Length: 252
Image 1: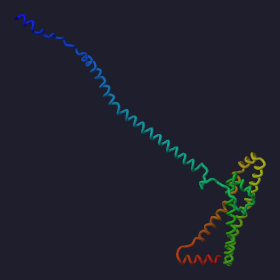
Image 2 (image 1 turned 45 degrees about the horizontal axis):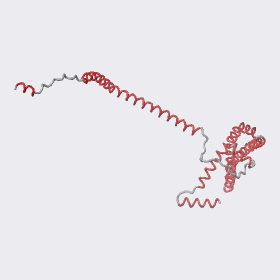
Image 3 (image 1 turned 90 degrees about the vertical axis):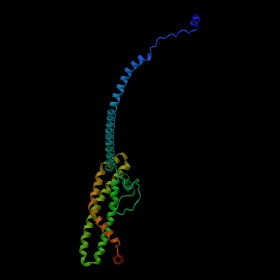
Image 4 (image 1 turned 120 degrees about the vertical axis):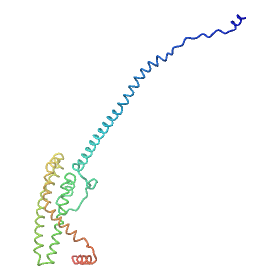
């Protein structure tokens, strides 16, 4: 009976040797490596804000320098455009239009020639013609004023002498300039290359002479235009307007 019991009893479980956890060694080793990684990451995090600040500082500085260069460039362009680029006040291309110039002795084709190749002289020519007309009209006005006040005619005559003297000087100067321009026109038509060379050589002299000749006359015409504008302006107020209209009728 005892033997049967022994056979029926199951054999005791065999204790298996504990299996070494291989990950422990790795974990230990991993902890060491991990510890190093943690140290590096901490130090990296410490240095990152400093680098960002440096980058921000440099980027702001670079942006400021770029803005300075841009502003200087814009200012230089504006100065160049204002002072060095030829101005076109009307904003349109110059176009030639035939005008009645009773005080100009030049032929029409020579006037057109000056418009194309001597534009400064052409502009002065227009001013010269208009100035002579203004002076002649002023002489007529002063003569009429002298007739109205014969006792004071010497005052009008004194002014007339000044105007006539300046007009004569201006006409004499312009006759010489017109002959020079006419000679340039003929030279240009005979030989275009040598003609252009002569134009370039004489351009400044012609323009300076015309400007100097016009200077004293422009002072006279400035006063004449201002006076005529003041007289033609209708005053305010009922009685002043009535007197102004009466004077206008008498003057006519």
